[in-house]
Image (cartoon, rainbow, N blue to C red; front, side, top):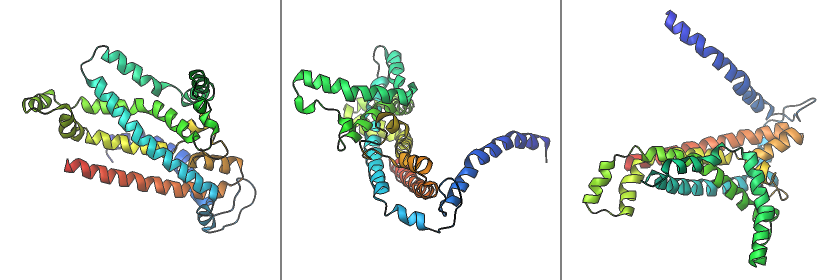
Length: 287
């Protein structure tokens, strides 16, 4: 082996070993225990696919799946609409453009726990007091305490915090479009909507694919924002899959069962991500 190749191998091996020890090995261990009845301590026995079958009959797990998908789909759509609109505004020739770009990126550098506590205060005190002062008694309530509306509070906070990152990606895409393309469209008499539909969106399609896949994946794994805002409540109305796995696996003595749940959820996320990439990349080619 050439000394150059040996040097690269020596540089890469520590990272591979660390990745295997702290990532791959725990994953394989979790898959192994998903076929047992281990509670996180004590003796255990093999139970085959019993844990996997029980997940599909567990009302709490199905409720968590329903909430997670509802939250992820709505949040992904809203984040991409808002971030694309903001990116187009920040890409235009306006005053204080650089300052505004920095301001719009601020939510992304704030800790999600801090953002969660701020929004908790807004939903619990500020908005109810404001609505009461304005005379809208029916709206003067804490939506986080309502099982039917609490998920909207989680969506609002998540969209506010996550839009910043997607805006940066869209902004990067918009800056790759040559200005002379728009000048040619102006000569042809294209209006603003036509330019967006025929030029802007097709040319930033790869960035749209990245944003959709990343946003969907991140929201399907929602944990921090829910812990900070509702901790899964009221009752279990805003309990996501990640939170359920954490609570059941580490606090409820259901390590093996929640490991099976985690394996199922991992497969679902991989299938959704691959499906998104295939569909959106095919659309890029068509454009």
